[in-house]
Length: 183
Image (cartoon, rainbow, N blue to C red; front, side):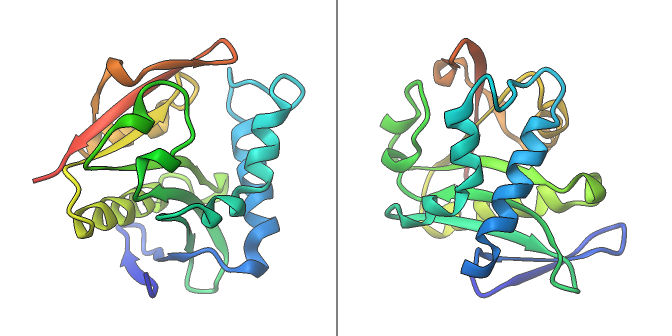
């Protein structure tokens, strides 16, 4: 992805591209801050391995058919990030998602609190959907939790539907599966 520019309704121009090495630390810090700031979501002392994964989000790019995408504004400020999986065996979640075929996956979407509501999450998700279509996949799979109601509503607005066959527990936390069937 060379860098797709997407103007939003709130006059924010968003560029989506692959994470660069110089951004590894900043994206990891953003991920930790966003997830630890979710009301009702486990904190770093409750799930240290999960937060270690978030802090080192860049490592996902080493997996086959996996990309760490970032959203930047016109000044190059990091607005958010997400992981796209073109091979579900690399998805790395609980439940049955890793056995899905003809599917792409989206995990660990995070948007800077300062730019929420301005289309960043939607742009990152749309970029992943476009990659899935380019790969010829029939569906896109993702997971979310009750603490992520803003993202949950956005996913449903984009056409994702609940798929309880993908649900699982992560250290006692219910994690809910969603699918988007592609034309």
